[in-house]
Length: 262
Ligand code: 4H6
Image (cartoon, rainbow, N blue to C red; front, side, top):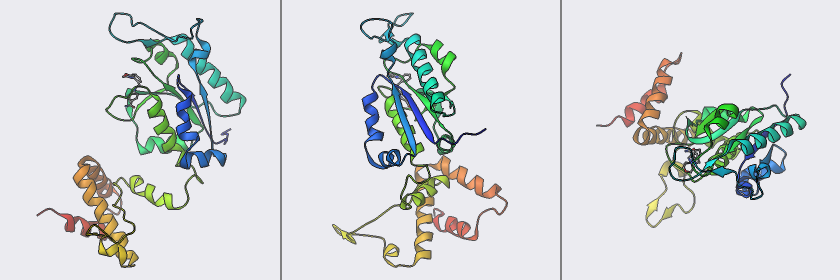
């Protein structure tokens, strides 16, 4: 039986205070207050087997830095699993945020957001003993090809991305913004008052009140930007459209002609 208990994240972290970034601010805070999601942090230091609370040690084979040990992490994950069960929440995957992971995508965020959440494992030092990963980790996910000092900032980004997908998290203004990425194109430019700032005017069409022209202009800007900044995304969008039953719409075909270079 599929339980529907909402989204719950259990985060294994040496720095639980960092998660105030999602519990105490903005859209994610409001969604938490509305009961749309839950968060619990688990500090592996709680399960340290020594009086100092240390959970790292030197790497076998030598080299710089320290490695997070298996036992405190395995016990922290075990405690998180028990707590999810006690709360009647589906287990959900154990996700390790790491530069070695599969790149995060909107599709993955959308998939997680309709599930019951996950246990998020945040690495510090040089990373985690591979035996913990083999025993406990279901998925390894990366935000992109860059290195952070710890997995926490990546986990925060993943949580924020999922929570804003929850029905009721955004005031309806938000859903439209999302649509452009769902579509596979980058968002269009935005403008607000004043109409002229230091001699730079707002594009005329946006002041025209002609909603059809505005929609068309925005789509054109999205196409231009995506082709310029993310050619691989643009190619994917085109391929998707062309292999679709109806192919390109008349409007899309016309816009593509208009943005044709030369
Ligand atoms: C796992 C292994 C995620 C996690 C090593 C995490 C980037 C991303 C981390 C490390 C992360 C991402 C520890 C290696 C600090 C470098 C934490 N960095 N690092 N791209 N760092 O999603 O030293």
